[in-house]
Image (cartoon, rainbow, N blue to C red; front, side, top):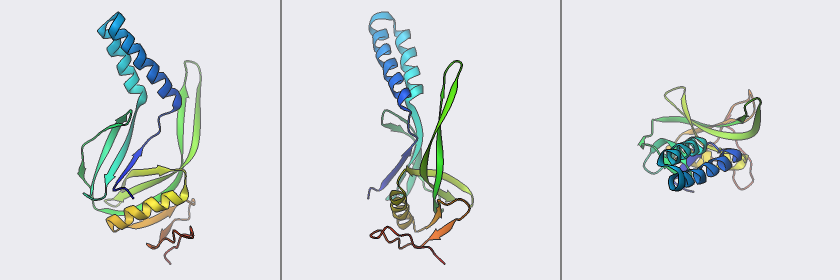
Length: 176
């Protein structure tokens, strides 16, 4: 498994399409209209298509909160705080689409891995739709950082997972 674990929020498809249209308009603006128009359109494209997230490098035990634009990630690497545990948490992600007179919110189910440190501070380290993938990544992070895994996928029924997750059979073993 890779030593760098990445999490970035997904940019909605409509924002990507509109962002690329603005990039083309900015190129047209730079060439045929004025530099000012090109700059305005490129700034609007950047604001539409940028996203936030985090990365953890398990080998060097560092992390960074990132701003991402078209796969280019910017952020300062910092030493990883003393992690206490990682939680596998089932939740929903809301994507709101607004127009001049209307608004709609779409939700999708995701499984989020949060790294907890300093008693109750956390940051997201990974997101997926697949429960097995979530526990595989959580196990990988837990082994690298020597921490425990908390299964918070069932509302109100949180359980500590045994370090030896039975990956072959797809079963999860809980600590008594």
